[in-house]
Image 1 (cartoon, helix red, strand yellow):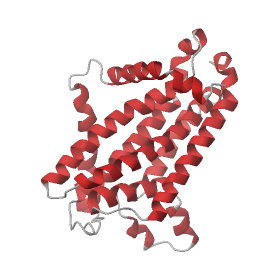
Image 2 (tube, rainbow, N blue to C red):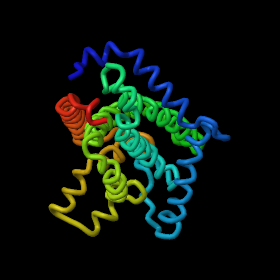
Image 3 (cartoon, helix red, strand yellow):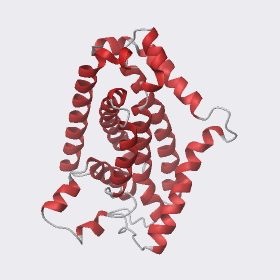
Image 4 (cartoon, helix red, strand yellow):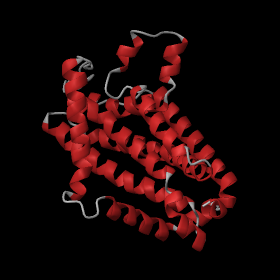
Length: 269
């Protein structure tokens, strides 16, 4: 089992693997890195028409910012969600896709998952940077709230890393994992207040069902990003505490599961 010290000593390998992920992602495509912006913009346009125009699922104005732009409200949660979905999909196949490398050379296997997380983090930071520019253009001064958004992003990275570690090693032993993941991500997406405000759900469920809905980790991440970038205020301490708790539980559980199943990776691959 690789220790934290082994992984820390492999910083250069992690950096090179991350660069490989970034270079390979849009290799030989005509638009190259522009796809990292085109994809979320097209998705935003579709959801804005469907949920904002046809279904009238618009949120309240930003409090206290007063901003009332559905597309920007949507992007504040959609971009972090894309990071989670892309990282989990990539993390689930990180070990299987590098089977030949794992069988030939010893190195901390966690770096393969870390490289996927790192490459998607670069994409997320670029997209959030563009979003902040758009928010400034419409008069939402997000500059003082960017440090808070970076803290939430750090927690999101830790949370996603833990899940990715677990999925990557489970997929080696149970190849159906990646297929179940695709279905689960669709359910998780619509069970989270990304394309609709949570008040729509609150109007239809109560008691234990609402508590279960709120227990969804991405509910809190979406709420925190929107508080900081759209509303221009700090998330409440309860939300921040839950984000820290979810992230800690995820990375500890993911590291433990990876360690328990790491021993026979080469044979299984």
